[in-house]
Length: 215
Image: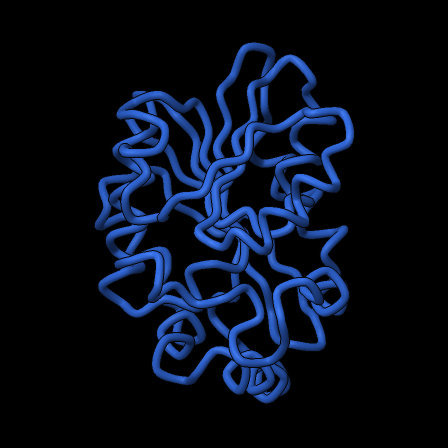
């Protein structure tokens, strides 16, 4: 995957600078809070937010645990510029990089926690696998993974609502998420204790919060 082939944060829907306005429709305050709660950053932890977008999740983690080192990584310079502007106290280290080559950006087994939100549903299946393998590679043994994304759409209403996401990001890449593939992919990447820890219904479909560990 090259820097020219990543899917922008809003797909074909709108420029990246409008991301925060659109994602507000997904009950983001709730799922962001749940994501950080399940990641449970501790003093001295190194935390990586993969596909950090405009930086809201990374900044929340840094506020929750000021003694953690938080890194936000995204391939899109435009959206990282928004994240840097938000970070008025320099709480987070912002990096331009690809999710399927995290070792090149932060080093192998360098992180205690990895989180990612609303990224994998946009990616082709081979890239989903590559990103999860890359996350596994940068986590230390005992490290924690939290993936927050559109998962299994369980009801007709949620499947209908999810069509908005599929319009923006394309059906080919998003349908596996809607069919519930993520836990299987997380396990296949080598993670253990994989489970869906929370579920948030939104006007764009249901968002699942998956947690796992690297032994």
